[in-house]
Length: 290
Ligand SMILES: [Fe+2]
Ligand SMILES: [Fe+2]
Image (tube, rainbow, N blue to C red; front, side, top):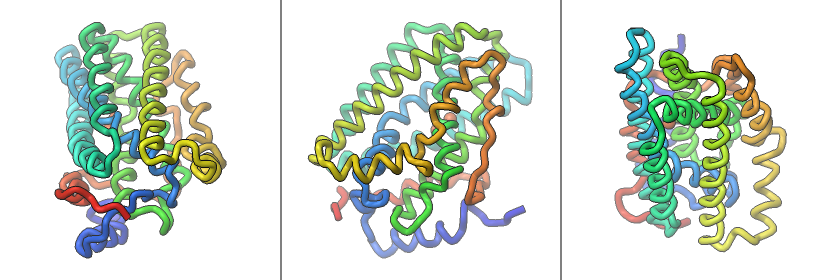
């Protein structure tokens, strides 16, 4: 077994050096591409409220199962999502300090989640959670399998942040789904919620991405699309095969473990709190843009 104390020790030390030397996170931290950088930044903006929604649904669902193993997995899910949300809150404050309209899109997501929570039964909420988790697991699989975050032209701190999040998403990818099944959830509710969640998720994320690009006057620049799109939809892009994996969810009898994870660079994860360290990557003071 790998005895590294956290994911990839060499990367941890490099990230720590960047913090110690006061090197700011570059505005275009992902291959100097506005499209790639903002795809991930927009995900960060819409993520924390979804995670808190999952925590509340998992907590409520625990009361309806006697399966001790599943209860324990629900505890792990809640713990991990709470850590993610905490780190993304810091990430989003940093985005705000760069002049991005983070607050608006964060609040829009919160309103939408609040609406779903009020209108849906616990079963409906779990079905939505199961699809959110499928989305994040499939996205995480692409990130880990293609190794798109590796390389010198990706800021090491952001690599660690997203690798950590992706690894945990892949690990706990079936917990919400299994809670849904445990409570007696069926195929048609699952599929109905899956369509709704997919449309809302894609809409919220794309809106936020376009607003971020527009706020930095990068939306209508040829280079944004020319250099960004191949990395998104090309053979090593995060959305390569995304559609195929997303579609698998609609098959009767699907289970999240049906999706194999390759993890090309064999990123490691050891379970203790590293979110504190990751939060420290973001400056407490407003960021200087480089
Ligand atoms: Fe998460
Ligand atoms: Fe998750």
